[in-house]
Length: 307
Length: 280
Image (cartoon, rainbow over all chains, first blue to last red; front, side, top):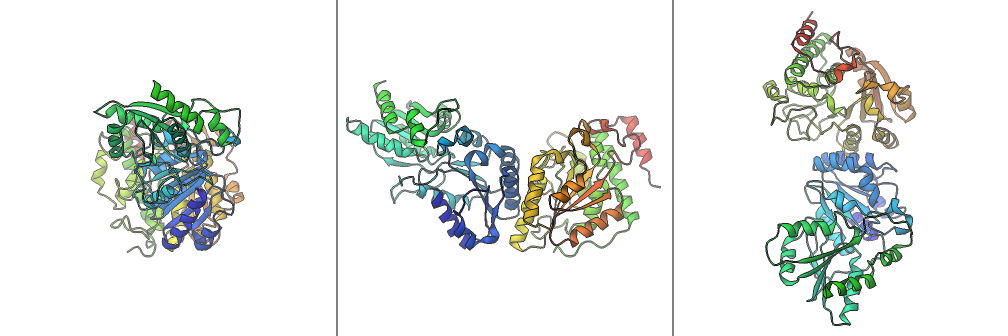
């Protein structure tokens, strides 16, 4: 995903003279081509995220479209005050990109996990909170975010994630899409972890269980038209996010459900428990430990349908 | 159109403007119970020098993209900034009759742009204004605009790490169109600024961070003008003007008394203050 981000930024920077890229001293070599295209609009702001965020807000208030790129916890909770005041309150159209979100850097330890970012960021008025599932979704959202009159936070994965969307899917901000059709249960999720859900759906299909999988593409704004349509079709839902269980996608769906009239929906939330992780391994290991890998999800799906 | 800097104004005229602003400020603080009076009184000359002598601005076109930008990084100085903007013609003075009233946009800190003409950024949470001004200066460089950017900081604000992050980036980027002015009144909310955090030697710190640093008497109009001119002449480094000031300047019983960080004058104190602020 991060390579898709760098490529799209390079392409856009060649076309748009208002685009600026601010990096928190990461992405070694990743932006070499961007720097060839727009050297005067690339800023390595150092390991100083608070300043970087306010600098971006100042640029945006002067008519530029700055994009900030660093590791998810450092571009969110590390400089939350600067996002709240400089970006969100001013409605300065900054695009904040958090790379390596969720458990992408699981083995680097809790300092590098981002399991609170969506929960915290979606409390800020006027800030969209996006979590693309694959590179195609990322690119579509990035283009729209750079034309939007308000700021955006986008959490992305690392590299090597598979493509999940079909070529004909209509992608963008606040756009949900079914990645797989089904009839017994709906898994609705955000981010690259949806690949695990697709594998789980394949597994349970062998037992005759038909599971639909949807990418919601973000937690703010929610595609409520899509959700309403799904609520008419599915009674059993599982929400899936590589994020803490508190305050993220599952919580956003519960908030939406609490306001909704109509046939009831049973929602089981899956995510990272409300605890810090100490026994570390890579992303696959950690997902497995937490029951968020394909096998664990298949088991959760079976339990939901039994219950 | 935004053109050349304003034509020179005599020190006598600037002093008269400063006196008028102090009278209005003290009166509003007393009647509307607006605190931070000492912090506002210490930066009156700095603001008057900026708005009447330095900034390339046109109150009739407050959003001209080529304008200079001034950010009140010490956002708690909003009461005096509002007086300055009204007197400079950004909006009618009568609008300030609502200051502090429920439903007014005029309260203790500047709101985001769009509510009060001339206000470039919402500040009040300290340590934001200078980095935002740096972003605006970098934007002007990319856009090839003549804009210069100014931020007025308090000495207490220099406790914030983001100020020093901005100082480092501004120096590496050689943003010579950026000028920081520090209203060094030697106090922060609850103590002597040097005792709370070891600020001294403040100018030398900025110098060591790669800035062109000057120290002046922040109540001396000629010194302020000379320092701003020297900052403008700098072609490599960002500039800082460490302006030595007196908190509560202009009212003898408020000067260097940190109680006036939060206190507002009662009617007797207002009368005594206004008696001292009579023109000579």
